[in-house]
Structure formats: structure tokens, C-alpha cells
Amino acid sequence: MTEYVWLVPFFPLLGFLINGLFGTRFKEKLIGTIACTAVGLSFVASAWIFLNVLSLPEEVRSLSRIAYTWIAAGEFEVNIGFLIDPLSLVMMLVVSGVGLLIHVYSIGYMAGDRGYARYFAFLNLFTFAMLILVMADNFLLMFVGWEGVGLCSYLLIGFWFEEDYNAFAGRKAFVVNRIGDFGFLLGIFFIFFVFGTLNFEAVFSQAPQLDTGMATTIALLLFVGAVGKSAQIPLYVWLPDAMAGPTPVSALIHAATMVTAGVYMVARCHMLYLQSPTAMTVVAVIGLATAFLAATIALVNTDIKRVLAYSTISQLGYMFLACGVGAFGAGVFHVSTHAYFKALLFLSAGSVMHALSNETDMTKMGALRKKLPVTYKVFLVGALALAGVPFFSGFFSKDEILWKTVSNTQLGGFKFWFVGALVAGLTAFYIFRLIYLTFHGHSRVPKDVESHIHESPKIMTVPLRILAFLSIVGGFVGIPHVFNKFEHFLEPVFPSTTHPDLLNLEIIFMVISTLIALMGIGFAYLFYVAKPSMPYNLAKKMSRVYRFLNQKWYVDELYDVLVVRPFNLVSEVVFWRWIDMNTIDGFINRLADMTRNFSDRLRRIETGIVQNYALSIVFGIVVLIGYFLFK
Image 1 (cartoon, one colour):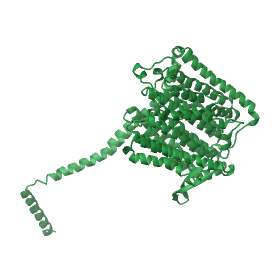
Image 2 (image 1 turned 180 degrees about the vertical axis):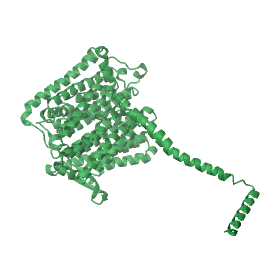
Image 3 (image 1 turned 90 degrees about the vertical axis):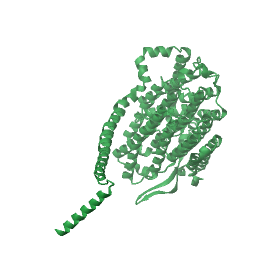
Image 4 (image 1 turned 135 degrees about the horizontal axis):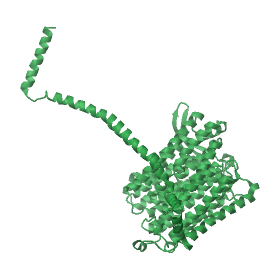
């Protein structure tokens, strides 16, 4: 079956071509069926390959399948080749499985939209690009998928481009990611310069002999790409604005595609990062700082989708923290569990918006628990998983990261654990703040909207139920010292970092982080249910802190002053007025003026009077005769 691995990305590509070329001629039902079938077949193929690889001995669970030779120029050769190993299989199942549920949900959510065919075509293309990214066996093919998800994010974030804000959000995502992609591309150039190849297996096999300085250079350049794609400091600013796209797109970007690409790339290149303690430290510090910053912004934001967006940025910080302390398996484990509950949260938010005429302001919600019972229950499951409440999926992966952080005294340690645990408490607070403001208390819904509140149709609630189930049971495969199937499955790719002799200490830290999360939930209940006036009074007393967080640490304003305005000024004064208008246009305009002046003089000769032409001929003849006579 592994010989047919190319079918996994082929099916979504085929769905994109069919709906993209002919979708406008189809009815909505057929368009949705084609798109969902394409991703469904991709998931079935991924699952079948997974089962086949699972039956193989551990030492041969890494397979490379070459479709054809893509580039052959002298010694430089790049193939369209796919790497099938435990890491790529996990990502294939997450991308195609969660992506399928989002596709199905979209049938109901996007019903009646005039861009219905275009939407599903782009959604299929997004899935195809992400599958290429995680299945590639070389850096160049990975970069194709990398740029593909960047293109699709631009197309889908600005899907409703008729509104300026949406178009601007898509452009912002595209531009910010180009900055990161430039670093990633430089890293690829260095890899080819040093290793003479872009094939993963060849590069990673030589990595232990790599000079520390060069390893640091390559690892940091690749990480610049990850920072842009996975929205870390300082290139995270595009992701909150990405909420301009349809909500299922937000779910796809945050859960199954795009933002997880950076984490996957760092995990895939772990052999390079392990050669550079400096690069590992940078990854961990950036991840931890991003997790904290985003969590503090989410504390005060009132837009239901933006709270979840900052939550994603924060959780991605956790994943990079895991990679930075060498716990790559724990980071990938959190990628998979996060995919379940973050897709669930975004799609549940979409269900709320569906009922409230696309309202996203939580201050205009409240008391929706009884009116949207299914949405409330699944939303609560997602919130419990994100908060890290015991026995939900997020609990196992988050605590695994925190434990690996505190147990690695060289790259992590107690200080890193403390900040990570603090972020866990903030996470529990802001996600239950969202729950209480949206579903509890008194209704703040406008009367004209409240009369039309209704639960979403089954085409939307069934995927929510499935994701809720995965958010509950999805973490059990990674319970340390019990099942631990997940990390064991990844051992052919990553070295094991389990410490069975420290089990008692691990349980202590797990209990502490759990208590911190429960305290966060308790404070949220106190602030927004028991004493709802308390947050307003606190905001008045700490107005400067509240304003600072509400303005998102003034990062956008800082970028506007330091980057956007100077670039606009240079673009206008230097590139437009001087180079474009004066130099390029000036040269062309002067050339045109010369031609016009010459033509004006030449035009005077063309009088249209025959006598003048005859006189000119006679004059010419006289001149010629004179020339020959007096020669």
C-alpha cells in the first residue's frame, strides 16, 4: 500500500481541480460532496498506510517512496518523494482527519454563500499543500507545500475580499509570512551549501559531524520560517487578524494546517537543532515568551474568535517550548491533541456565530446555555481540554511538556516550568471567562437577534460531537508510564526522554499544575458568575494594566511606527517619487517628448499641397546635379 502513498495528497488536489474548474456549474450539494469525498479518501488512504506501517518492525518503519525525478542538474537532484515514518503518519492523520470534519461542517456553515465552489476548492488546495509539506522527503518539496499553505491562507483569510478589512487581513498574513519564508529559504541554501543535498535522510545522517556555529546558523534561519508560519514573537501579529476569514477556515488554519507547519518543521529537523544548544535555547525562550504574551492578551479580549486565536498562539508557544528542551515527541503529541480541541473550539464558536447572525462580541452574548445545548456541551469539552483539566486530552500533552521542561535542567529547569505553569493558569482563566460570558449569566443579546437563536443543523453538530469525543479520549494514548503509545510510536524518529525513576516527582508536578488550572477556572467563575461586577471594578483600579493588555501590548502600534510607516515613507519618497516617477517614468516621458518634438517638425513638411512636393523634388534634383557637377 505504501507504493500508493501519492494518492494521499492527490485526492484533495483532484477535488480542487474539479470544483475550481467546474464548481460554478454544480449545485451546492455536489460541490460539498466532491470536496468532502476527496479529503475523506485521503484520510482512508492515510489510515490504511498507517496500519500497514504499524505492522512492520520498528526498525523499518521509515520508508521513502519516489514518485519521479523532479530536478536533475549535474550532481543536484531533487525528487517528488514522500517520507513515510511515524512523524509524517501522525501529521497525515491529523491533517486529513480533522480536515475532513472541518469540510463536513463547512457544508452547513457556508450554505448559500455565493463563493461556495471557490471556498471548497481553496479548502481542498489547503489540505493538499499541507499534506505535501508533511510528507515531503526533501527540503525543496517541503518548501513547495510551505508556500502552498501560505498562498491558501491568503486566499481564505481574504475570502470575503469585498470588505477592505478582510482583504487587508489576507495581505497582512501574506506579507508577514514572506519575512519568515525568506529566513527559511536562506536556511535551505545553507543546507545545500554545507551538505550538497536537500534530502532529509542524507542531511540528518551527516548532521552530527556539523560544526556548532554552522548548525546554529542553519537552525536559527529555519526557525525564522517557523516563527512566521507558526505565529511566534515577533511575527505573530498576522494570526489574530486571520479571523477575518470564515470560521471553518480559522479552525483549519489553527488546528490541522498552517500554524502547525513550523512546529512540524522544527521537529523534523531535530537532528540539526540537537547540534546547537544555542538554537535550542532560542526556540524554548521564544516559545515560552510567546505563550505568556498571548495568554495575557486573551485575558481581556472580548472577541470570541480572537480569544481562541491568541489561545492558539499561546499553545504553539508550548509546542516550541517542548522542542526547545528536546522533548520533540511531547511537542508533536500536543500538536495532535491541540488539533482536536482547537478545531472543536473554533467550530463551536462558529455555531454560536451561526445562531447570533455572525456576532463575535462576547459582551453581546450570555445565557446561551439552554438555547444552544449541543454547542454548549461540546464547547465545554473543548474548554476543559484546553484548560488542562485531568482526563481530557490537553491535560496529558500539556503536563508532558511541563514535566519534560522541569526535568531537563540543562535546557529548561524550574524557571521555565514556573512560567509554563503560570500560562496554564491564565489559559484556564480566559477560556472559562469565554464560557461564562457566552453561555452563562443574563442575556445581552439584542432583542431582534434573540428571537432567531437556534441550534446548528446536524451537518454542523455531528463533526462537533466527533471532535468532542477525540478531545476526551485523544490524550490517553500518551499517558506516561501507562500506555505511552504515542511517544513509543515516535521513538524511531525521536530519542525517548522518559524518566521512569522520577515518576513520583512527575506526579507531584502534575498535581501542582492541575491545581493551578483549577484555580484559573475558579477565578473565572468568581469574576464572571459569582461577582460579575468584580472585573469591571478591577479594570478601573488597574486601568493602565488593562489598557496595556487590551491594546495587545501596543505591539501593532510599535510595528506601525518602526516598520510600517518608515517603509511606506521610503516606498513613497524613494521608490515611487524618485525611482518610479522621476527616473523610470522621467526617462520614458523625456523619450516620448523627443519623439513628439521631432514628429512635430517632420509634420510641417507634410503639407498635403502638390506644388510644394513638386518644388521639393525640383530642389532635390538641383542639389544632386550640383553635387555631381562640382564634385
